[in-house]
Amino acid sequence: MSTASDNRPLSPHLQIYRPQLTATLSILHRATGVFLSLGSLFLATWLVALATGGEAYDCVDVVLKSWFGQLCLLGWSYALFYHLCNGVRHLVWDTGRGLEIKAVYTSGYIVVFASLLLTAAVWAVACL
Amino acid sequence: MSLRSPLSQAKGLGSAKEGVHHWWAQRLTAIALVPLTLWFVFSIASIAGAEKAEVLAWIASPVNAVALILFLATLLHHSQLGVQVVIEDYVHSEGLKLVSMVLMKFTHVVLAVASIFSVLKIALSGPIGG
View (cartoon, chains in turn red, green):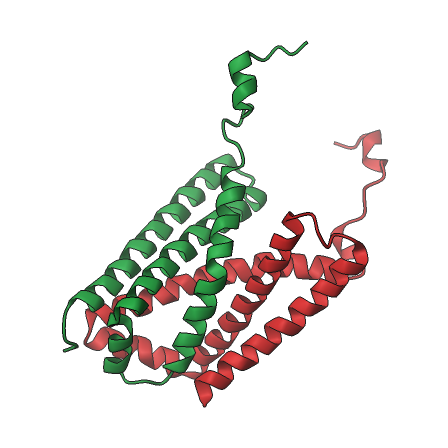
């Protein structure tokens, strides 16, 4: 069905825009949130295995200590701290503060830096 | 002149029949999760690599067990509120939206009950035997 309306201008698609800190951090908040929900599935599995005892826990423990398990833990720890820091940023916005473009960029960089720092801190605690 | 009844105006809920409950619950759980999450992650990190008996003893301590249950309940409530919005935003077919929403909510309830029950079982089973 070809009509004259096919030639109407379209608004630019998402991929037209140069990636910006604001948009990237925004979608990252949602992505880390979904990823952390999957993490809660693993957390529940770990607790059930602990309460069950016997081979169930050994099984989870083997996965946890494998390179894949450690990679997941690294991902979950960063995602958790990112979502936490950016969540606090959202809570500040909810009070009507920090909504000017300059402030949004400043808090964005603080969130990236703080989440990396907290991730390093928690792994330092785990490894020492 | 408004055509809304005085009662409907007083309730102020509109056709969606709900107000800011979802938004408010998401914020409240977020605030509660700030200290709970920091406590949980750093505690878990400090017992990383510990023997199973040590982990069980840590969970069984009353303060840890209570904090863990608060953390799990708040976390899973916050999680289902967030995933709900993701499904609402990205799943456009009404049928699929309903099915995925119900499955998602049920899964969260199962995870909450299973994980909290596990903490209680460990905490209330007395001296750690395994």
